[in-house]
Amino acid sequence: MSATDHDSDADGDDRAVSVSDLPPSAKLVYKVLEYEGSLTQDEIAAESRLCPRTVRYALGKLETQGLVASRVCLDDARQSKYWIAD
Image (cartoon, rainbow, N blue to C red):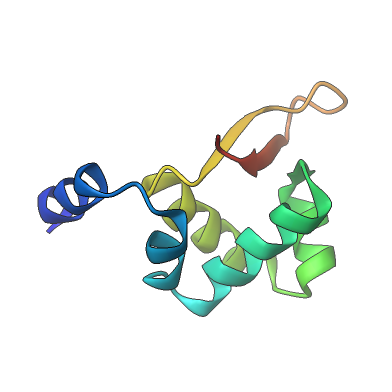
């Protein structure tokens, strides 16, 4: 299943189509990152009013699709910062 998802992404790198295929929580997290910029998981949960577990799930879906990137937060190494991938 993931092989076909990867093939469809290679054919057309249209972010709108990729985001539209995701669950509603992933769409909301994507929009929060689009409007607010780079945020930690806790900040995304606060902005979106989703529970942390749902945010984790949504970020996983977004990272799998290559729509979101992350790195360790310099302020607190226990957390990661997430942003929309270029």
